Image (cartoon, rainbow, N blue to C red; front, side, top):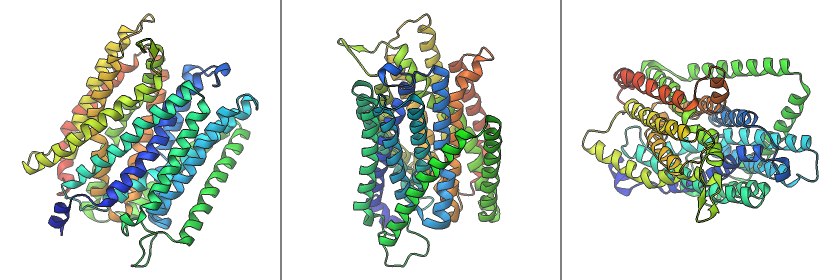
Length: 497
């Protein structure tokens, strides 16, 4: 059966999920490219007039929570709704969130700044919960079409990753340009439309998913969601938006010390609940040792993303403030520099995909921990270059855009060694009944990295330590540690490559 499948190539479902993820990433990256620029723009220019530290703090909290809520979405999918319904719910909720961000921009002259900020935070909150339902489950559906040791699995996730990055190009290119040059509101509205297109695409091509991701205990002849399923999807989506509104409204009324306590208690409850779910669903020594591998790699994943996610924060502001963006007398929008990474993905992901298959045929395909270590070394190289760019920009100098181009491309090589390989790794190593929950756990490592990315600059300033050299040393040290641990992790994977 495996040989037959390999001869036939990848299933049609891969391309359905590829395009759905592309539109979702169009929506997310279009919004992300505008976020810090919108927050720091003057009130007269339709923004909020926040300073650098305040905008990066919001960026840190948002991008951190975006990757933390997939734990909830994975649990809901595994325990109640199935992956497919949960993906639809997440997509619809995110479309509402983008529309709220658009409304906060369109109402700049019709409502007071406090109301606008509330609407903006409401939109971010809705995006956070919607992403949590969408993100882990679409990735795990991809993995269901391949056996654990199928050499096409890493290649499939590289193809899927191309969908992510095609959307990541189109988002800043279209939504970013509209936001910077026309109106912030039109940028966010474009992101909302992109998400709706993604939901419709999945609906029209749902049969290609065969019976993957259906609700638990679905009949054997069921291939698409029925009217009852869609009633549940609409009810859940509306309930999540209303619940988010209620939480934000109550949060504003509580004193700071109470919100801090709730945050710590909520985080502790999440960790305990996740630990209980994993403990209950993991059985036997093989499953436990593989789970340990996942946890170790998730820890090192944090170091990489703490650096990589400078792209939407400090490096986005570096493009705006320290880069010579004039091209034949025309100023390139700062948000367009966000396109370098996904464009490099589109160019190099197919090469990496073929490379893994060729190396596998030659018995030279590196094991997953070694791929991660190489990715961290490449990240360290990227931030060594970024350190030189930052030094050249001291004193207000505008530096060549080629600095950012080279940094983004080298970071892309590192990303291709970690991110698609990590998605594939989860579907191989996680216990079958916990795949979505463990994918949520994996996303939580992105959450920690994203939050650290936004907060590092203000933390390091207190100790008079430069940001980019610190990240370079963090990645280099992490890569060395992982290289030392690789033989032990390979053994703990119990035959999974």
